[in-house]
Image (cartoon, rainbow, N blue to C red; front, side, top):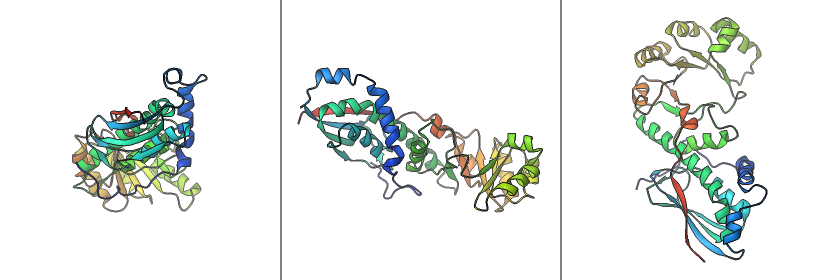
Amino acid sequence: MNRPTEAPTGFAPLYPIVYQDAVRGALLEDIGRGGDLTTQAIVGAGDTASAAIVARQAGRIAGGAVAAAAFRCLDPDLDIEIRIPDGGDAAAGETVAVIRGSARPILTAERTALNFLARMSGIATVTRDVATAVAPWPARVVCTRKTTPGLRVLEKYAVRAGGGSNHRFGLDDAVLIKDNHIVVAGGVTEAVRRVRRSAGHMVKIEVEVDTLEQLEILLGERVDAVLLDNMPVDMLAEAVRRVGKRMLTEASGGVTPETARAIAATGVDLISIGWLTHSSPALNLSLEVALKL
C-alpha cells in the first residue's frame, strides 16, 4: 500500500475552533428536536461498542479530526484511534479509524461523521490524482471559491491534504480583476489603475484575460499574476512564452484529469480547478460495529 513519507507541501492540521461550529450545526440538523429515535429505542444507555470506519474504495483521507469531533461532541469520553491520518492513502477495505465506548453516541453521530469524512476525502482523492498527473512539471494544482457555503475552510483543507494548494479564501484575500470588472472599468488599464489607487501595499493583484490581445495590454501593467481563462493549449503555451517570468501564470477553465498534463506542459505556474471542491464524488466509507465491549 502506498503511504506518503511526509505530509503534502503546505499542509497543516486545522485548529478545532475552525470546524466545531460546522460539526455542531450538522449534528443539530440530524438530531432535530426529538433525538435519535431509532438508537434510543434499540440501544441501551449502558451498551458499549467498538466500531470501525472502513474505506470501501481506495483514496486519500482528509477530515479525520472533524469526524472525531462529531463523535466527541455527543460523548467526550469516547476513545477514538485514527489509523490513517489526513494526507495518508487508504486501500479498499482498510480501517481508517476505530471508535470505542458508549454505543448510543457512536451510532447517532455516525452519519454526520461520515458525511464530513467522505466529502473531504473525496476532494483530497481527486486533488491527489490531478496533482500526481502534473507532477513532472512545476505547475501547482489550486482550488477556487466554488465551495459549499459554510464548508469552504474544510474543503480547501481537503485540497491541501490531497497535495494541492489554495487560491484565495475570500474576496478580502487578494485582488482578482475578472472580465466583468474590466467591462465596468472600461478596460484592463483603468481597472488596474483603480485597484492600485485603493489597495494596500501587501495586496497581490491578478488579472483575468482570455485573449492574447488582452494579455499584451496587461504586460504593460504592474501586476502579480495573470489568469489565462479558457485558452486552447496552443494559445496557452504562447501566452506563457510572452509572459516569461514577469508574473505568475494561471490556467483556468476546461481543466479535466485528461487535459491537465497538456496544460501543465505549457509551463504555467498554476492550474485552478473549480470542480475539485464543487463536484468531487465522496469517498465511499462506512461505519461497522465490530463487537460489544
